[in-house]
Length: 247
Length: 247
Image (cartoon, rainbow over all chains, first blue to last red; front, top):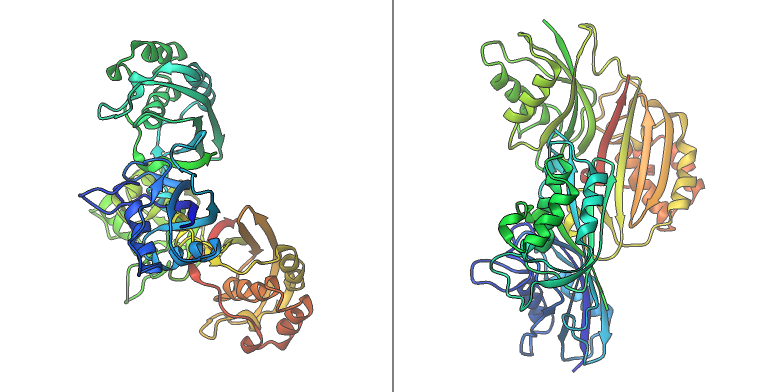
């Protein structure tokens, strides 16, 4: 039975996140229902994702895999899912036939996220639910400099959600880059894997630096405290995008 | 009574357009209701816009003016409207106190529009209602070259809606620029003023060129036919943005 790898874009608004939940509709469920319609005569396949994005988090480059009976070409799988998944706001950008050993989650070497802050006073009707609207002017350069203390191998307990199921709070942050893009501030991060809420807790902390309330030293002290209480607040889910999974 | 000039951004989705209508809610109405709440003791002011955008058309830089009793600073007007206008997707970017002779519509020297085409096969959940999704690959260079026959002073009857109320179909198109921006094709136009549906009819015609079905010569012939039947179809409203009004 051939295995397919798909690259997916989705609007996380109103969804309970990647994973199946009892309390709402998930991206995984939307994909599985579309596959069941595409290939109605077989047992509906299980779709395995590379990263379990939270409720409300978006994706520009989530990756998943599944096995499918029949002799569908990759393009037929892409177009078939996109046809049957409507009106759910999930889109398959690319489908590929891969080796039957391929595992979207365990084979991933790096995951990349983008966090979009809109930094201006008036509301942004055309970006609602796609950016974190911060009215106070933020210093992106100060945020970038302070963020560099987080790069490398650290115990990230300070930036870890209490419900996080990872065995260890130690992770290696490969990169964190903060840039101004017109009226937006973009936070880009890369790591092999992340703790639950790690990116959002980092962004919420760096906002304190951007406002001038925290220094680079404060971020360093927070990291070294290894205590969630020492970190800043959690930035909202709707500013976050899973942009890439590298294999 | 001081006169205010405001620069406005809005998401046109679900609105009947700029102007008050009997069959739905307009941007003008949203602004007038917000002003009535901001300044409840006076006769609700009438808000005059620079351009009457159609139902579904967005704005990044619409301009309007109105008179308001009381001694509000420009910033108070901006923030007050933005507070009271919620949850309507209309935002005042800037408010200025202007000369009492200022007229947003008649003093405008140039209007600029952007039309966004998303040119890829998979749907785009995060851009729904903000771009025209065209799956067939378009040749932006051919579109740009063909579009240049429209620049200058012409009778634009071919690109004019039958319901257009302008006295003359003769207009001067100052600029039309078509560029590729990643997966999008952007059509940017500038003129002192436009006929009803002029931009959308031009974009619908240039799409025929982008697909390879029409040549630059066909566009020239269509323009010279001075007949709406000779032009291409009307591009959808939701790809269009009023970006700037120049005084």
